Image (tube, rainbow, N blue to C red; front, side, top):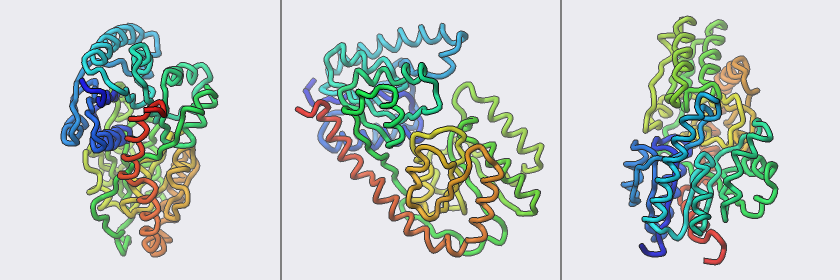
Length: 381
């Protein structure tokens, strides 16, 4: 192989936040003239998108760090997938002989280590910011970053969490704000909302992301006599199926079956945002960034987001973004009422907010910058 091959390792094949960011990274590398080989642990919609972008895709076993593997019941799977993932990674490094290894997220801990063993420059892209984790957990999570020549970080918050664990990583790190493509032609918000607010939640179905808080906020508004509908777009990680069941039970027991709809995972969210009046991002815990919040802003919709971590960065300076107390359905309900009461003003401000977000998160600028950093991982190439 030529010296212009970039081997990319990514932990999934869906099209959620980090998956879409990875796709933009690959597009930038392909446009810069690199041969890009991406390895995924499974097939899925990301695989098709990567092919369309001009990358080669290899589906191979991978060791992906999941919380369930940290429990004694998961140790057998941890050893098995670790061994299989290490063998597959070593084979790929031997077969592609890349000039650079680009590892997407810290949930692939073996890749940076194996890359350095093979004397391949390693670029690690950190999308995580686990500030609430214990010191030992963070030490384990961020240890693979010590093997990276260069580290890209998606927010100042994520960078601060990482360097609070290993201060020496600061000299290798650079914050590169996520690329967030907007809809081709965003529609203006509805002029009248007399029939009630149409609320949208987009994201993983898990306690962390807080879809249940959105459901509870709709119930609280119902008690106040304020009619609201809620669309939930997203699916669970493997192992979180009981959470989805509890969500469905809560909807039915609250008598909201005709007003709250679960749509499952959807590749294209713009149609849902087009029909929505407001997007809620009710994360309970720290978020390294807030791609979904930015997507709502780019779709010319007001956003209600938890006042925490990376979500603050995502909504900074945005007049049509409401920040609310995390883990509080009543705070979300109050913010929804405030949005409705100020609707004429909100409609007049969404275009300004959209312009700010479009400038910050330009895919073209992101793609160019990532290509520059990945193809020059040591600053000398």
